[in-house]
Image 1 (cartoon, one colour):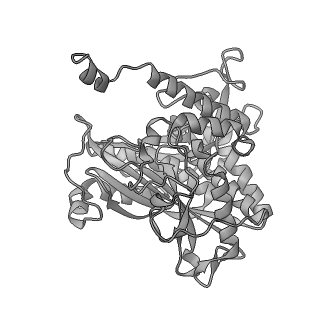
Image 2: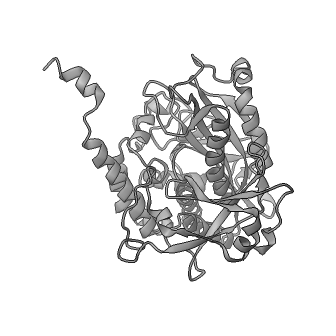
Image 3: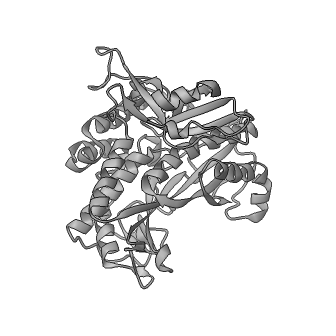
Length: 431
């Protein structure tokens, strides 16, 4: 029960209680403050269909929840205190967790896979720390195009132009316990990156779900549409989701050896390399996401690793022992953070347990490495690899994999049944 979270900040009349759906989209209910103590005690009901819907809210039968069993309820409970939202007077936000009506975990809750992996890490003596970097576009609400022009990456002038919306994003997210380290314009007009400070992995994943949902609210309040869609503009930079991994034991970062990557860290890298292709679906779930994977785009196309090298899939950051980490760079900003983190951490732990060794370090341009194992560049291949993988199903759960793969297959079918404007422009009058 969550009765310890029943106290609300002064002046709150409404609490927004949210969880992440199969795509990591923030969903939930708004509750009057007068009813909040009851919610803390008994939860608030929500259909389990929430874990069986796609990004457009189409719902599909699954073995666990379907028309035959009537799409029953589950309950959301607070998973921490409620924080006042500075962008909406009188409203507080609280991140939640779910239980079935039997007070047990819901099997198709994607959060469960990460919980299991972190329990395994704890038994091995490790706490997993994750830092998240997400890119997104800020677009005009009417045109759905950037309001600025040209590439202003790292430009402080461009930062100042966007400060009227990025400033509130940084400050307000910090106010709701999502610690923000920095923000900057990225490699396209309208594109920005905001970095969440590293922390315990489950909390990091929860924060990513809240981060994306709340940024949409804050951006909307300032007249923008925020999108984490992987590749909204074909000729412009895509939106990545870079995850920075480190393992800690006894207060020390076990990836560090005098400021360099340790032997354990290299085992972890090798485990990630081994599974990167078959777990691709966890980090890139739509046909659009694979449009990011282009050479010379700063999106990796293979499983190479290297120190401070942005052409590889696994970039090693060295320096102070506390800062040594592995950055995995192939995920898309719109994927489910629980699925991608669970698969990545489990792969790294396998590498440690099996004492795997990575391939030789790439010191040059990884896009030109002819011997490197290539990542999937289309959704159909990623689905096939995931469904054939005992690893992915074991980590996120067969039911969750079924929902993930089923959605991806429906997206492929949907795209295959469209006549695009490009086809009409090229062929209608000319053929």
